[in-house]
Image 1 (cartoon, rainbow, N blue to C red):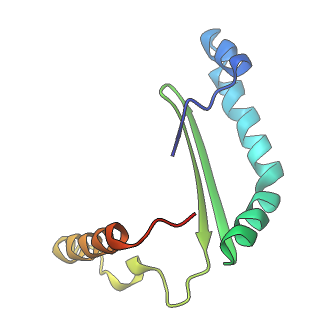
Image 2 (cartoon, rainbow, N blue to C red):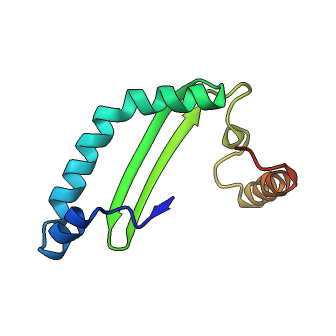
Length: 106
């Protein structure tokens, strides 16, 4: 998640009621850069990237860039049945505990 992503020009467009144009331009740019950014993330992480999801919001000024790596054993959510909230919480808590205990990755 990113905050305060709008340029001065984009902020000006938003203040003049042209937020739709900002979102449209951002979408076009993200589509144009998708393959290159996926390749760079793969290079930096050493893992193949199978998908990239991108979204922007102007008020509040937020952006999200999500890169999905190829799973070696399947995504954690594949082990959770729909509607099994108790198990979802347990798995989620276990993942959070593991993430908290792991050293930060750069």
